Image (cartoon, rainbow over all chains, first blue to last red; front, side, top):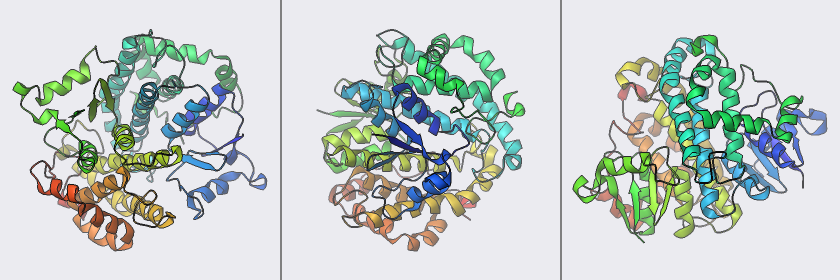
Length: 242
Length: 242
């Protein structure tokens, strides 16, 4: 079965967490919105799913995964679904829920990484909330980012199967997602990350190991991987990083 | 088995979604942190779980549910877990994931309802971000709240089993959570809700039906239900509602 992914075509954003899981799994998928309208792609195809009154389970927002007749939204649920089908999560209920719990904590951090540059509203320009963004960024750098990475370091450290993975002794989608957070943070906050990373050696080592996985490495080097930019969730604005 | 809930003792907050599910299920549970320290309760008991290095699955933040040896965090995962055990969700994979997806959308809205009064940082006082809160509130009232309620109305409207429940023809934890959102919004934004509610008759009717369920009604009238206040997620500040 060929999966269909529906997400904004010009940013990594939340869609990237799904792409990484699909790539690592070697799954057959189409990134629908990046195809031309004439081939059933483009943003209109996504809006059909978001607004259609014939969709049994209407999504609130992208990313959206179509798997046969199923339409699934919410990044963490799509990942749980793919994790079950492509051995990117344990099979026990306990292990599945723990992996999902870590993903939700990653998702929560992602909201904070976005709201740093949009503290007042998604729909206002950055330029209209620049001063407020600086104040939020100060708190993000000194409290929130260290709290998040400290937690992930602790999870790796307390993993009784060794500190190479977040869950048990094998790669899960949560590892891929933590890799992506480090990627995004290095792009958006290079100065901060240069300071922080020495404190979180297990997180940094996990990032490096994921980067070396053959499918992830090939994907990251390809044109399929959209470069980070200042339309996405992680954005580099020099004044927020210093 | 007696469940143990760990959550801040003086606010409804995220813990209230768990309390409502436990109450509706008639489950046996202890609200640990609301018990005195001398009986193993209080905030220290929660911090033991949050910081202990002998916890296999350390939580990032409350609410936390202990079910036997299991320690589960993240509101939506606790609800999925309880939903399975107390018939507060369908048993099919499709129905379970859909209920969970709606809960995650509710959780996302909750973050927005919180950040209205704390746009710059959780750890700054409201008084130090009052001006910014007014700007964020304007956008929340005109865009975000109507978008959320419009979506929930649409889900009810498109439910092929009738518009009395979000999922299928029976009560799920997602219905209880939407009830709680309406409760919180009526407290925090009475003027806004008086304007909005006529546009969302199915949401309003669902709220009224949940309020009449015998166990919910008894709980809401009891001392167990902590009143809304300006320490919680939903806060009433007159200037944000007008």
